[in-house]
Image 1 (cartoon, helix red, strand yellow):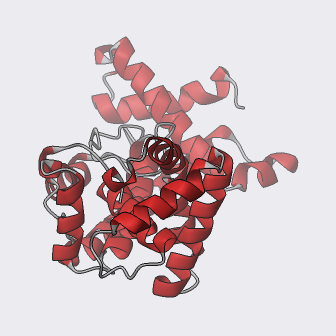
Image 2: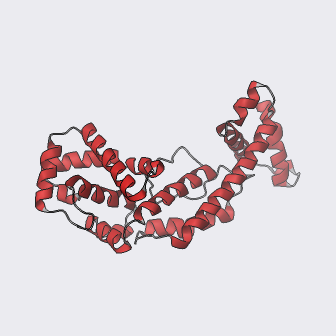
Image 3: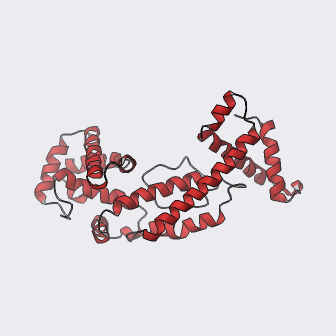
Length: 277
């Protein structure tokens, strides 16, 4: 970690750029914001593994680490914009207003206003649509890029099914889903896994009563960890069968399995699996 003596000259140069060389007009809050910008860029260098190699040979100054970080942030911003532009022509929101607004309104505003030099740590958006990954530790372009990667995988997963099929599953789950702030991929995945567990074709939109009784009898006797493992295996089978060897997609969808295992266990105990599948 660099000392304040090493960091302050970098902040000073940023302040000059921001204030047009009239540093007396710099507020404390703005100076603090610029320090966060410097630390954010240096952290990008650390994450890229560059600082560790250079520090070992004592070759990298704080200024160098910062400059490399600025370039990395700029590159990631371009990469995120390219991913966004790749997603949008075929983007489907399946009636989820939260997903639609986040992607069609929010994202365009982010790329319009994001400043990779003076405020790279500012995420700008609230990202209301909840993806399956926990992005709470990320800010700025790191969070935006990770969010878009999640959306890419969700669009890939949902795009395997007809649009009407997805919307029918969502409506069966909650007729007001369009106004809800919830992850639609998790809802669809839960229904699909019900069919996998019951060994029913996905084209059969609803499971029969016998299917529910069989699932309830099986999982009533299985602990939550055991159910979780079975669901993860089912996700792996589903992805391999329909998407080939896609470890990233499988890992992403498995992030929803923990909560599903709890819901399935409770539904099996109380005979209410028809509310899940």
